[in-house]
Image 1: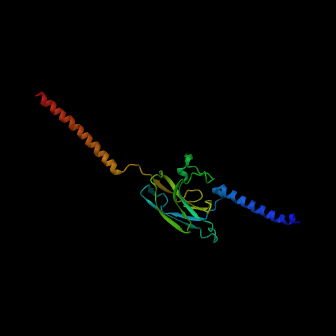
Image 2: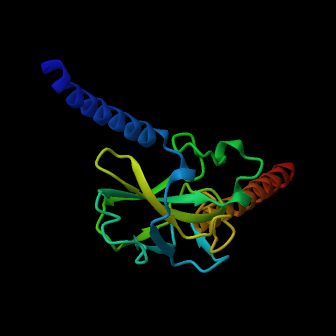
Image 3: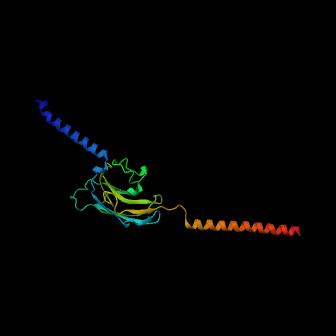
Length: 208
């Protein structure tokens, strides 16, 4: 009798364990294709605008899509804002390849900021100096307490063809350095001519 009474409890416990396992498996899958687009994200650059690495700032804003039910973001704990390559800057570059599994995806390689989720939020970000020249968009991921992706938003459409902007990388040389280099070269040439001129005068003087 006791074993019969315990059977429902055992079945219930098994169901709980199975549900927990399935939730963990789904959480661990980390597939972008299964991630709901719950955030609205905007960035200040206009389509096609060129921003310079190490110099220009862009303003990024994000927040929950107001058309979604209240409580959609109850489990959101943190967000990560990333700069992502557009398809035109991924072509023939396998190291920037888009992969559905988030742990293997190379689309968004530049972290802009990571911070606690606060609903509507924004940041003024100076484009990094090491961002390669290319075409980009911005994506924001929302994470739970276990650092698992729960939702996302981005500044472009599903095909990643709209609202794209350009980043122009710095050359690594400053204009002042170029000017100093030119002046030094000119000085060296003048000094060389001066040396030969003086040597020639000395030779003439000695021959007299």
